[in-house]
Amino acid sequence: MNTAKRITVLLAEDHLVVREGLCRLLQAEPDIAVVGEADTGRQAVALTRKLRPAVVVMDIAMPLLNGMEATRQIRQSVPDTKVIILSAHSDDAYIESATAFGAAGYLVKQSSAHFLAEAIREVHKGNTFFSPAVAKKLRHLNQQAPDRKGRMKAPAVRLTSREMEVLQMIAEGLANKQVAAELGLSVKTVEKHRDHLMQKLDLHETASLTRYAIAAGIIESSVQLTIV
Image 1: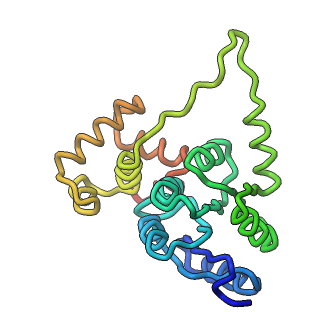
Image 2: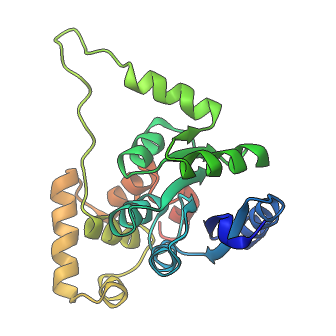
């Protein structure tokens, strides 16, 4: 099959061994072509804007910019590109965030290669695709009943793209000066973002921001070991 007729895919995964394995699996599919690879969330956004792939397969726990926020930025800047989240996590919070940020599919990493190829084909058609365990959780989340007083569960706090970027870097242990250099901001602006995050999330110390970032799937729990 001509490459031009294949479904173009960008792989965003920071673990080289995993990324190479995914690449080999997809290259065996006659109608799918891997056109790019990214090892940070920011690189995934930049390459998507440059290459305009049909589908991005995105790991959640990406350095510099997590997969959730990268998904949101991709959907905003390249709306024709579909994003499939590929993660080791299937917690409700991760699934809710992924769908809220515009992911068209969500697969746990234990999913078979068949599921990944099928997911790519389905989201390329304009459909959604979730691995069975995730689909079951989504049905449960969508059918949640109100409490005895008629109230639904309070919505999660929504952060802006910039707040998500600053939160992730703080949680990964970067000092204000480092965050400022990475994002092209002044240290004073980063300090304001940090203060606003603490107010918005009702948190009062960096360790609490880190715990929030882990619980929300913004960083992996292993990151915490390097900064606590």
